[in-house]
Amino acid sequence: ARAPKYMEWYGAFGLMVTLIWLYMEMLRLLSKISSRD
View 1 (tube, rainbow, N blue to C red):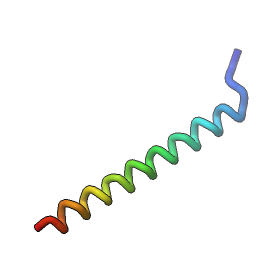
View 2 (view 1 turned 120 degrees about the horizontal axis):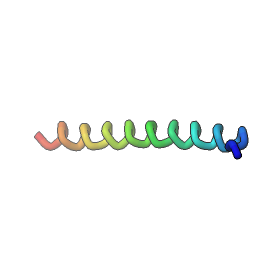
View 3 (view 1 turned 90 degrees about the horizontal axis):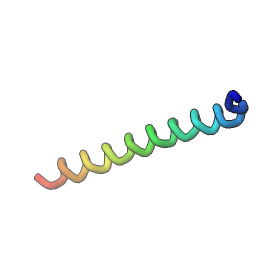
């Protein structure tokens, strides 16, 4: 039984969101670190 098409889209979307979230978190941490000086 192969996964339906919408599951594929769901997985890709979830991956995108995760990457964007990680990127935002990194920026937030970097700004916190640089403003601490």
